[in-house]
Length: 146
Image (cartoon, rainbow, N blue to C red; front, side):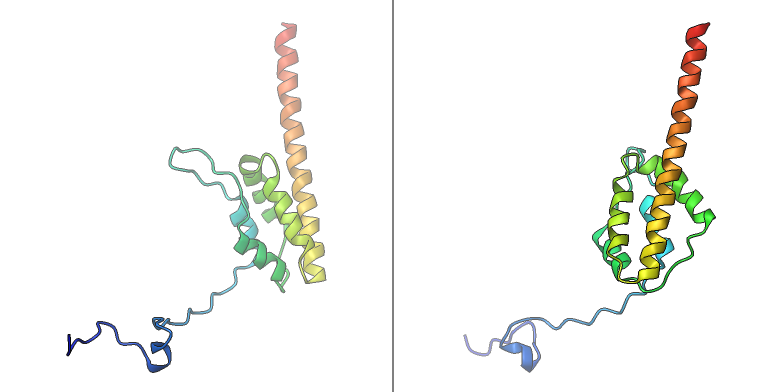
């Protein structure tokens, strides 16, 4: 079969390798650390309208470990995350992963701020859980006395 022309034309440097030409990906803007933390514990629903559990992706883990700039871990962020985490992270697995990522953070001041935030978050979750248990036990004892 003479006169056959190939469908794809490869550049001369890649003709021997047989690989298509790839365009370089644009550099992604790094998300602020506070946005990553909010996203981890954010309340979202699955297709059956159940709350999805909180999770820390590998990408977010790496972003936290390699982050250079400290975020503003204020009381408003803590309150929002505590409220969301009480619904999405009852077993504290995402919080544990966040603490591990914080402990591996390269920047000392950010590591300290993140670990302090994790302790504050765990304390808030524990206090809210204990308060709800105490309320339930008070209701139980009030009902059983009547």
